[in-house]
Image (tube, rainbow, N blue to C red; front, side, top):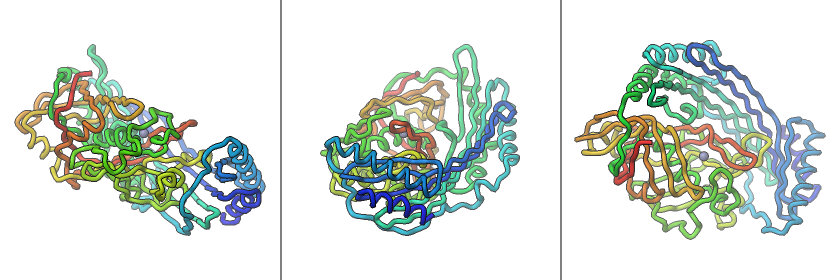
Length: 480
Ligand SMILES: [Zn+2]
């Protein structure tokens, strides 16, 4: 592959490029899902190709192809140069990349059980066992389960001398049930409701999730929700499950810190940010307890890798320290505009897309409040809400509203009445400013989000969020 990479790099330079890189990418995935006792879908996908990115006269050009041959690489590279030349003719600031980066390395996701070593039969067996448990509870209308496994092989080479090979593997799995009565539909899911639980690593993660072991509980809770009262309206202490804290971080911390959004270069998918550059280093984002890092090195995170798609090493960058906003997530070009070096968050959704700033693992660091049960025990009056059902947030990432699957009244440190259709609303810095308890490291999970969307054309991305259960005071709650 080194020879083929050099074809692109040499061709680009001969045609006048001041910088070029090529990425060869092979994605392989297997997905199986079961619905109401039957296999609903089975798919095996493979996608292979390369993308060439060049800078000519200070402007980017990009082109790609699924045909990995010497002649095609020459043709595609020439096309990328042509595109760059055309966009350079429209006056704009020339692209700066900061200091050159030259790295030769190989990174392989650590895994105990190779994700493709487990037969489809064995995967279906896990899902059918969970399905049987879910439907043992009377009144369940729909029971769904899914397992996905994925491997990505990437080679990155650049005119600055980098040559980096990566073999990444991931798995995901989840179950959900629906129950229906005259008051509406109730849903419960495990381990979360954003496309199942996901991690980098091997199939051991699916075993650890133990889908059958949680199947009966979610069914029983869905049935109880059908006749539970609607969540009351008020202002109270709100305790969130760690999977909801993860989504709250995603929407109200992860997206606003994307520097291309801040600079107005990327406005798709509710796309600017309130977090303008004069706020860097002084803006109070949350209470003293709130520490957020972008960490592409955390073991098993879905946004964990060796190098990003510009060949920048995976890093752990403080974004918020003791509540004060510190830094953005950047790529080489946006970092250079602030006189910084990239913190390694540029990724592309496959070989035929240009990389852009994407969350890695955006983690709310653990606190010292123990477990969820400890936080409940420390709360005289409030409400505990579990697992996301719906969300909305404005285009600056400031005002938001989340609906959840279930909630329980908290009185004198104990769980009481179950409520259906709970929701809460808030404003990003006020909400994080009201955070007064965060669970400890033993109760901290790096949740994977396999479907973060950004860009035009849309690029889906696999990102992660470390989160523990947490408590927030004076939060507006209501029944949706
Ligand atoms: Zn997203």
